[in-house]
Image (cartoon, rainbow, N blue to C red):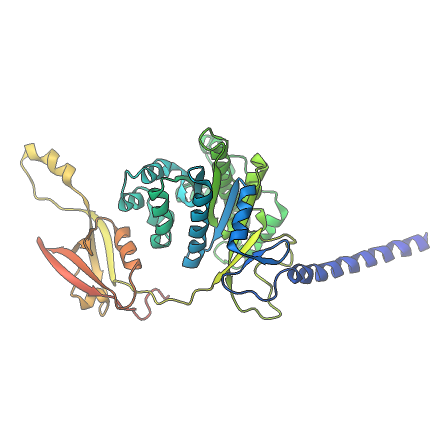
Length: 423
């Protein structure tokens, strides 16, 4: 009996040592298959570690119904990759394509239909989809993609849920939603071991969410299963039944396949490809490679496109606090009141001006109403933010304001405000 116990302990020790050795070996082996030297513009076929051309990458599209391009939201080069893939898709498959976008919310599908149909302007698109609140990233990063879809009448599919719904799930959890809200959700998978491990790593660095990781994980799963449901529903619809589908989505939703791609595949088993855009950075020998987490033994994507890590750009600001108000009207005769009410529009009013800012230098004042910027009419706060976001140091802007009933043209020259945006 004693000999058997000793033998059993010996087996356990050997197995433990083997597991520890395997853990140490797996990471170097996975990285060994990845090119030791990569440059901006390289495309790597991850399974083989081979560098390929874009033409070779594009040939792989023929064998897939769905192609995911994972973006870095604020990196222009990442969006340039998406644009390159979109143009290639259209060149190869013509009208037989559709594009799904994480940036747009499902209730706004009718707005996207009007956009691709040429029925609304860019301003209407941003306003009707509440871009600033619902997405928030600089629209200029997506403008080329959006213009191309409209010019070529390529169907866009809204994939996401609204921020309000995300917030409800975050606060109440799925079980805390109303019966109607729960019934509107697809089946949500919260049992993927490596997916949970990946998100735990992300949440670990965020103090504001670390107290309730479980609830935030539930939100993430709901978010990804809803987008997967949007993709699957479209592809199984009469309209999308034979279409090639291109998905523009955050890289975190496709890395290691277990976010959206796996959830879509579980629903329809259609062949797909994933392209992950990776910002090239200097790594120390002891650093963990961002694409190959030591405790996640999965391939990060089918293909990795290497892009430039952007330099920290100096941001300019107008230097004002602004808000939306209804334009004040003088009292009219009773017969004119209804007509006058219909003519009222939102106006952007300056509440305060930062001394020494571009607005301050241009003599803008509290109480001024911003009517237009560079000839484009302004009626919403996000339009001002969007317009300023396109400016850089040294650029000018012709702003027309209304001050005490008088229209006044003002030229503003932009520059970086020291300390702006810092806490």
